[in-house]
Image 1 (cartoon, helix red, strand yellow):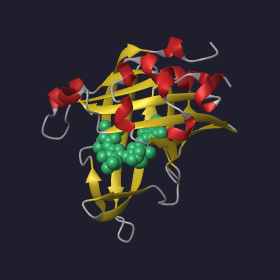
Image 2 (cartoon, protein in one colour):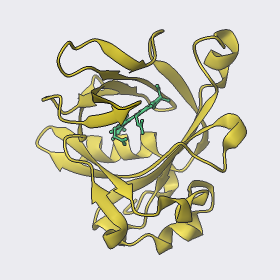
Image 3 (cartoon, protein in one colour):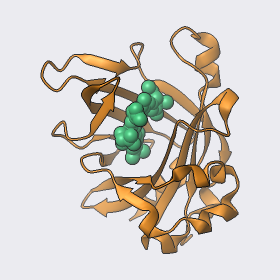
Image 4 (tube, protein in one colour):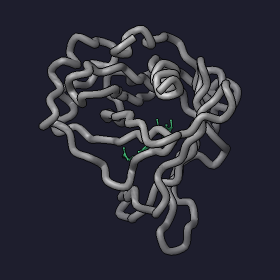
Length: 195
Ligand code: CYC
């Protein structure tokens, strides 16, 4: 239980990869990732509303999701959901009173897209998308599966997300220059329910 709450607190925040984008602009656009704690009632547990956006288009995120953290033995499973008519909630990551408007019926589970995350010593968690090539993503008319690794620390995280061809396992989309490196700009850990 301790590590479960630690993971939740470390994830809760507004993150940017500005330093990396300035260092290496050809390979890394500047992105903001905001994990905003959700009211306990929505999932009867700990979850986040997630918005990912280009820094210059903060109000039009390119991905908005709901994540549900579930203890699973010595690991933590993160279930992913899309949101029906999700544009209704765009911006709520930074206007948390609007999060109360999200209802469980608005959520659609993304099968095959859960993450399995484990502590790695006392200073990090490491995780991957569940095995089985089951997180399917259609891009440019092509079927791909998600391969993804994440490492989460107290004030930062790194994520390497790529799409692969299911037949050849060749990379089709995603970073070709290693993981994105985000650091926490605003901390929302005090909003995690049950503190
Ligand atoms: C897709 N990223 C995804 C998907 C998941 C995650 C589950 C596939 C399903 C979906 O569309 O939502 C990520 N979910 C996570 C992670 C956790 C989790 C990491 C653990 C906390 O529960 N993503 C980034 C980078 C950027 C990126 C900034 C690098 C390239 O974090 C891209 N992720 C990215 C893209 C997709 C994706 C382009 C495909 C989605 C699409 O095309 O619509």
